[in-house]
Length: 338
Ligand SMILES: Nc1ncnc2c1ncn2[C@@H]1O[C@H](COP(=O)(O)OP(=O)(O)OP(=O)(O)O)[C@@H](O)[C@H]1O
Ligand SMILES: [Mg+2]
Image (tube, rainbow, N blue to C red; front, side, top):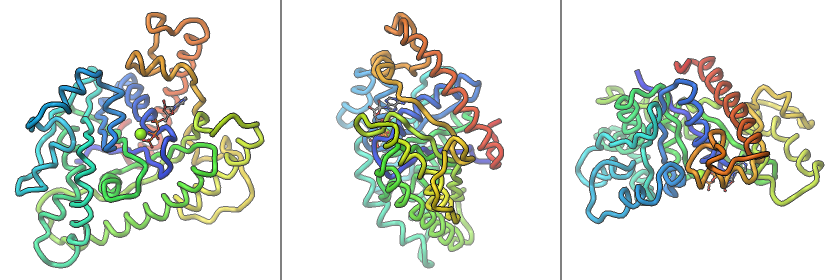
C-alpha cells in the first residue's frame, strides 16, 4: 500500500504554493495526521521556511557531504551506477517531518528528460523507470520511515522534466490561483499538460508488463483550486478582481477537468471545485517567517498583539477549514487519510 501524495501546483509562479504547503502541513499535523512534507522545488523555499540559517548551512554548505539528507542526495547515485537511497528526514515536530530540498536538484532535469522516452520500447526498462520514479520511491520510503498518513509536496512553477516526474508521482492535486490573467493563462497551460503527462505515463506503465518494483499510478486527481487574494497584482478596485475571479470556475473546468463549461461568468464561492479562498494576511506573513512558525500559531511573544492576534486566530480557522476540506475531498476520492 502506498501513502497518498498531494501536490500543490500551478504553472504561474508566486501564487502562494509554498506558503500553502507550509501552513496546510502544520495544520494537518495539528489535526492529528502524521505528515511528511517534501520539497521538490530546486529553489528550496519550503526548506528555508522550516529550517534556520545554521540548519541550512549544515545541510547545504558542507563540501563532499554525501549523507542522504536532501532529495537530491537520495537520487544522485542514479546519475552514476548506483541506486536511490532512503532519505534522512528532518523531524520538525511530533507529527511533522521534512524531506529537504536542494538547489542541486536542477542538475537532475537532463537525466529525467533523457530517460522519459526510454520507458517505451523493449530494451531493459529497469533503469529508466528507476530514474523517472525516483521522487516517488524516495517519498514513499520517507513516508514509511516517519509513519506518515499523507505526503504534501511543493514544486516550482515550471512544466519541465522535474515537475513531470513529481506530478506522475502524485495521487492528488490542488491548484492555487491568483485573481489575474496570469493565473488563468497558467491554468490553460497546466490542464492540457497534466492530461498529456497522465496519458503518456499510462502508456509507459502498460509497456512494462512485469515491473520489478512498485510504480506510481499517475492518478494526478485534481481536488480543486484555492483562490489566493494576496497575489492580486497592485492595488486594484474590486471590479478588476471580480473580473478575473469570475472566470476561474469555467476555466478550471475546461482546462484542468477537460469538461465543457459555459462561457458566462460564475461566482467561485458557489463553485464545487473551489476548495477555499484565502485572504491576504498582510504583515502576519513576515511575522510568521521571522518566527519560523505558521501564522496561526503566532503569539504575543512573536509580536502578534492587538489586531495581529485577532488575525492569527482567524487564520487558524481558515487553515483548519481548508485542511479539513482537503482531507474530505481526498477521502471521497479514495485516498485513505480520514
Ligand atoms: N495568504 C497570503 N497573504 C499574504 N502574502 C502571502 C500569502 N501567501 C503567500 N504570500 C506571499 O506571497 C509570496 C509568494 O508566495 P509563495 O512563495 O508561497 O509562492 P509560490 O507559488 O510558492 O512561488 P514560486 O512559484 O516562486 O514557488 C511570498 O512572499 C509569500 O510570503
Ligand atoms: Mg514556491
